[in-house]
Length: 289
Image (cartoon, rainbow, N blue to C red; front, side, top):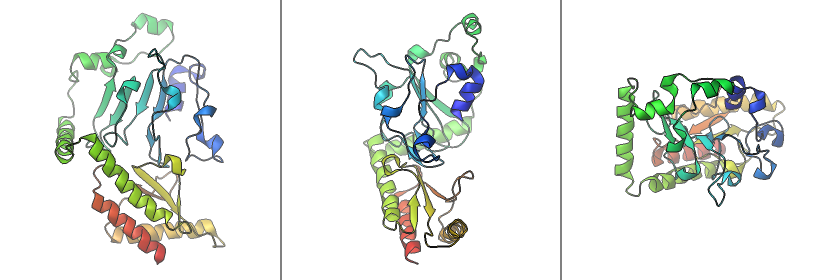
């Protein structure tokens, strides 16, 4: 979606898709192609990527090495969407030009977006220059420089959502004296519990993404029926049964994204360790039934 929107706004001659997972994974997502295959533009204006993809459960394990700044500090301006994994692990913030994230996953409720941006990127080119370059002009209210100069109060914010975000941050600081390192360790523990339960029964479950890029936040898998004559139909019925039984155990919201189906466990910060343990136990019990 981001690439398509960039093409719509800027034109195809200004947008380069560095890599497409489908070309490396039999037409499907679920992998991050090896960086040696990426086709980065020479001296790009910026490079954008999504740090954690929620539909198939793919997460960058680390900052891409090909985007590392050079010894002299030069390199592309890297912009990342971290809506679904922010506050779940340490971020090498100095390597980014900007990161942004919606609050609705790990920070609070829907209604606000947070942007962390390098100060030298705040000034906007003049409107005349933008017109000469044939680039679209953003409304003043959407310009980072305007927002920063007004301390994020250029317009009236959704105050209740900001209040909730403040409560979440206070709770995180009170819960984890070691700050994000504590949440990072808990996130890894929860994800391991669930993935280990799935991996223990490969004849029943198939984790969607490649092991090397499994998301800690969105654990996506399918129910397998390899010996069925009509496998697709049987697997669909098995997934319905899994979801129904899970909901009866108080494990709700496990249905996969509407575009792909399957099962998806959202393992965001608000999910306690006990919740992950309950899901792992149910996964084991269902496989044995």
